[in-house]
Image 1: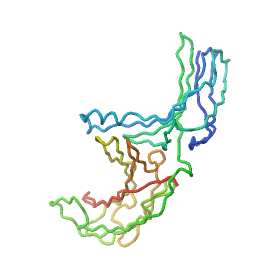
Image 2 (image 1 turned 120 degrees about the vertical axis):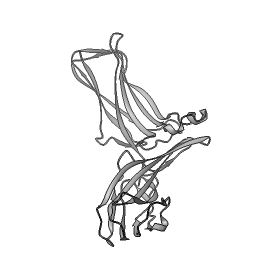
Image 3 (image 1 turned 30 degrees about the vertical axis):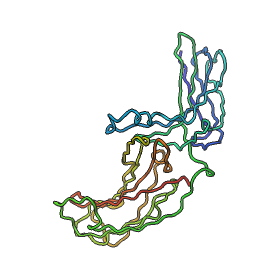
Image 4 (image 1 turned 90 degrees about the vertical axis):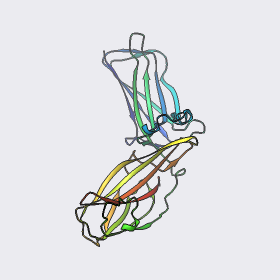
Amino acid sequence: MSVSLDIRLKKPSKIYREGESVSGIVVISCSTETRHEGVNLTIDGIVNLELSSKCIGQYESFYNSVKPIQLVLNTFAICKGSGKFPHGTTEIPFVFTLQGSQTKVLYETYHGVFINIQYFIKVDMKRGLLAKDLEKSCEFIVESSAKMAEKATAKPIDFVIVPESVHKLKSKYNVPNFKITGKIDSLVCSISNPFTGEITIESCDEKIKSIEVQLVRVETCGCADGYSKDATEIQNIQIGDGDVVRKIPIPIYMIFPRLFTCPTLSTANFKLEFEVNISVVFEDNHLVSENFPIYITRF
């Protein structure tokens, strides 16, 4: 005898905003008539924080500040009491309004390295003493509504990279003469629009191997007593290959990846920030890089 559960949401995109109705069906497939003791549906939204290995040995209050944060937790019965499901497929519809618990704000879905913000619909089918209970979960995505979200305002910037402006140079390395100019269309970015700009190699004595744009997440966990701040790469895009032609603008165009980025967020226990590094790699594998902290909004 085999029984399986499945959760199907009405929206194929699985994207919802706070205050919206979430609807779908729970599909129960049985090879034979199956007895049950009730079916419950749970909405679970949680922020999971994790300290990096470099923080091992910090004092206890530090660890208390990185406990999981519950954003929403609601359970209700979609099939009350005991009964039997017939052979074949049974569909049970459900609908609920997406709201945070009490004063909690529903942050946007985000999948990171040390911080994860996730929302799940979980179905639990209770069975008799001699049969194992069945569980099924389905992740859905939460985005900020237009009323609540901050809107991006353009903040363009021009930049120039020359040997004198490069920090942390090793004295043993003979820095070639170069001049690199460019512009970023805006340091305040809407997550639904691409990150754009251009870079121009005005002059360079050394042959160039590659020009790259790197998107970095900066995740901070902790409180006033102590915190862990870690920067990790999200994606790296090559925009120039080989010894590129001088004095010709090379466009910068990068899409923000879904789930791995979200609007910049700062709370009492954690922060999510983002940066862009524009790097020029020379043929001997030395590189010069310019760092741009960016502010991401939903709209």
